[in-house]
Length: 143
Length: 143
DNA sequence: ATGTTCATATTCACCGATAAGCACTTTGTT
DNA sequence: AACAAAGTGCTTATCGGTGAATATGAACAT
Image (cartoon, rainbow over all chains, first blue to last red):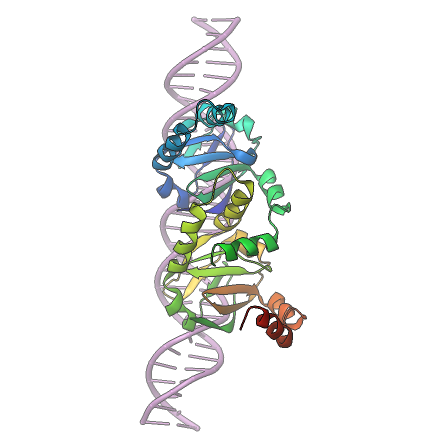
């Protein structure tokens, strides 16, 4: 299960350290693609095939669905972690997610998300997250 | 059943003693996450996996669900109690909960809560918590 | 009261993960 | 062929996490 929040920085060539705690769950090779809310998604190989399967079930006749599928598949890249624990983020993905240097990597269960750190901080400080709402959701989920 | 109130202090590296009485109920490994009212929550593994299962079912396409899942999973860390009964609190969680040195740990049935001690004192002294008021609210819940 | 045991506090030393800089290779362009 | 740009790999220094040793203090039994 991918969890936690980590902060690292891109090197001059656009490589990023994969936090040691995420590495084992994610595997040596994994997939990153454009994500929602301005971040990148990263999937382990098994989670990626799951995800692909779901995308395949969407009706080709629906324009919305076609867009949705294109969005995820066109952005997808396979990444490999090198001996020093780093991986390269393709330049188009870096651009999409507005990445400069400071990066936040978060584990979200079945995937990781890679954020421009400032964006992530802002996202967290916004009222995306109100305590009342959280409490309400928690009781709904039986915690 | 996790109960009681304990006061301890963080060491220089951000580690905290887990009170002996909570250890057996919580297990060697447990999960801490961002909680409500500015504290951290700690769950036993069984409590947590329940919760995870539920989070997994939430739809990727719903923004509310994404927010909620991100809040809990990005804030989560697995902790392991070392031979001396201590565990490390990740720096982002320490920051979130405003932890300096003096800590209060309380048992709340199915989870523990970890507080900055001053915050905890203040929270208790405020009219957040008048026993009478609480009792009154409880009748509404049919107790 | 005294000694024993257990829980907690404090300090120090070591190791692994990460940051950062640099050099080399590959590829594509002129 | 020469060069620039992008990708890959290595080396070193630093810092945070981890474990060990010791000190302090409370609880308990004799």
